[in-house]
Length: 255
Ligand SMILES: Nc1ncnc2c1ncn2[C@@H]1O[C@H](COP(=O)(O)OP(=O)(O)O)[C@@H](O)[C@H]1O
Ligand SMILES: [Mg+2]
Image (cartoon, rainbow, N blue to C red; front, top):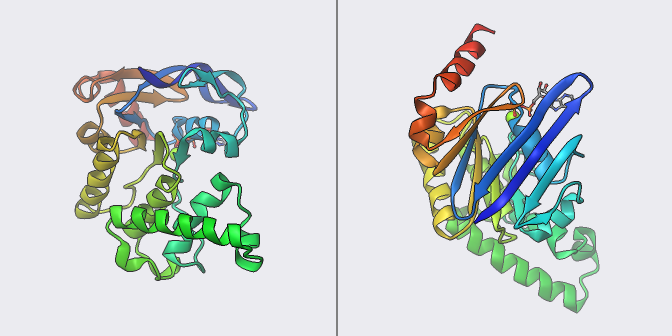
């Protein structure tokens, strides 16, 4: 059963075809890798699916429902969560508050009200969100860091907290944008382990990476993009042996 599919999905920025007529199917319960050299259109794909960027053309279906051009908040409520490539957290907030912030949008709770007004119902709701956030922090192995400032975290911790913030809404589909970029092998393995655990919990994952090795290790199915177009798709083994994928990456080295 596909959880997400796109038909002729396109995004043009003036003359730049960031994504061009992409047909893609993501099966429920899988880790789906999305690879391609820099500028291939990977992040643009996430931006459209998560409702942050209007489509130029095409359709996006989530569990067979047309979600094209639906506002980001509603997409999140339907069960799609994501992380960002730059890994931004709010630096002068604790780790716990950063993770909790993933829920505010979702719960329809205004964080300003939570902090200043605190009527009884909001306090009860806040406690529930806090418990959910603590559970998620435990899952990523960072319970001990709940009260640390986000600004104190090292890179791998930042990525993990971003994943926790995305998971706290209990999504059906989690989209990770370059979750291991800039990491060493050990750190990368840790994040890979978490991603597998997420999949094993029944959450479908789309993982963007520039790193073919990572995606080959991790994914059940892979789509490869170059210059906004799908150049290949298949099992990790098929992708690894596809000369079109190799050429795309060699082309990047020459740039
Ligand atoms: N907001 C934007 N305005 C103009 N061009 C953009 C914008 N976002 C992305 N692009 C262009 O679209 C192409 C695809 O970018 P992106 O999706 O970020 O690639 P990737 O994530 O695969 O590295 C690039 O040529 C990029 O410069
Ligand atoms: Mg990108």
